[in-house]
Amino acid sequence: MTKRVFSGVQPTGNIHIGNYLGALTQFVRLQDGNECVYCIVDMHAITLPKAPEELRDNILDVAALYIAVGIDPARSIVFVQSDVPGHAELAWILMCNSYTGELSRMTQFKDKSRGNESAPTGLFAYPVLMAADILLYDSDIVPVGNDQKQHIELTRDIAIRVNNKYGSDTFVVPEGRFLKEGARIMSLDDPAAKMSKSAANSLSRISLLDDASKIKKAIMRAATDSDGEIRFDPENKPGISNLLTIYSVFAGTPLADLEKTYAGQGYGTLKKDLVDVVTDALTPIKQSYEEVRHSEELLRILKDGAERANAISEQTLKRVKERFGLGSR
Ligand code: AMP
Ligand code: TRP
Image (cartoon, rainbow, N blue to C red):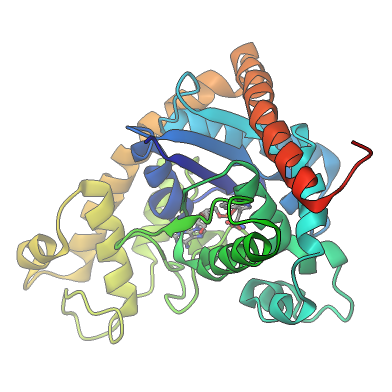
């Protein structure tokens, strides 16, 4: 039986090579043989303050990037979360079946609320909305980066809990899909932190739309270490190991081969070659992005995607509401 794949990316700007290598490359590959649903999760993006004009722009940016990296809207459903009302509806039902204790343990919530005396309720409930996204489509597989492991576990816990109470076929219990390499790309300036859209230093990341000179600057300045040895050893050499991972995944060259090729060479040589590898990989993505970003076609894709997503969502909600005894009929 064909499997249903679901994933989402927040329209928060600066989509970077971590998003690409950890998540988007999986989205593209999983299109073969599966039924894929890819969402732009704009309701997640308002858990922290966001200017309206910027949000609308960022939504279309992610949509255009989805198409530019190779998501095929003829095969896969591409849509914006808030265009399908079922996400918010199911999120409420799931909130009544999740616990404040388990949500308090989510590390993303702890990170994002740190320093805020009073965090928005939506930030706290964020993982429940994510669970709703996934369960709404009876999803089997959820391709994401490692930072989402805890949220996927929570989604499974909620699904199993509801199934135990309301019938074992209420929800499909999904599985996360994580890559061996690329699932956690680190910051270029600080390899102890994951590459993120929001880090203040823009040289900490390479965004998919960065130009060649920015790519060069970020890689040439990337943190390394002082022993001069090119070896994959994330624990003792996190900076070089991160660069080797990026190289390996973009070029499709095994890490062991890279270690052999660069044995005895300086970091400068590795970095210079990596600049070319990344620039070559991103150039065609940027070109397709420019072609589609301001097209009528993009809006048509999202409208069509929302209709197809809504059709699935309505079926699931009908089933769930029946099980819960909700509604007048
Ligand atoms: P977000 O930007 O938080 O919406 O993330 C979109 C997707 O990219 C999710 O599947 C994340 O797990 C993944 N992702 C985010 N940052 C990284 C990173 N530094 N390395 C690998 N994957 C990442
Ligand atoms: N929380 C995810 C992130 O920050 C984004 C997301 C929202 C998501 N809903 C989802 C990912 C459903 C996979 C499935 O990256």
